[in-house]
Length: 192
Image (cartoon, one colour):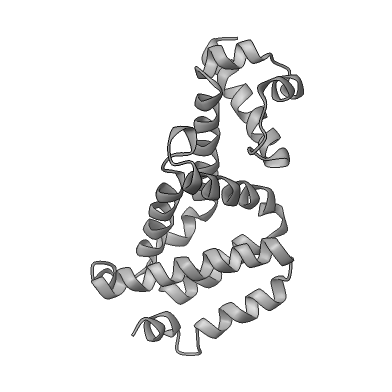
């Protein structure tokens, strides 16, 4: 098996491991044992533990964007986008990825250097890009449009933290519905 295939195989196995166990206390020895490798092989393939963590964070971002990428396929408006994204965020099967995202986001804020550096900023930019694609072109390029998608992202991020902390999806969904209204201009009104 060529090194690149083995590298990808081990990256996927390590990704599954960190989805279950998190990254905070990641140690190469237990990780390697769990995925059928050795610390020495992981260091050879990824350069260092930090290199592996960087790759895992990139893999998590790619997974997240792949899963929500369809949301930004058309200018559906921010209220519809918030509702669609929330349905994805609230799905039980996405909890491991979202817990990993929160862990990496927080860690990148307190450890801005090294493997974690830039993760929070990059994910903000990722999500703002998805939300911008949902806006009509005239809104997308305006300061008001930028403020609207920033508010939408802030609300979604806060709702996600609440959901992960409490598990109360019904209450959080009800809170999100306050932002929108029957005319679909809840975010636009909230910014003004």
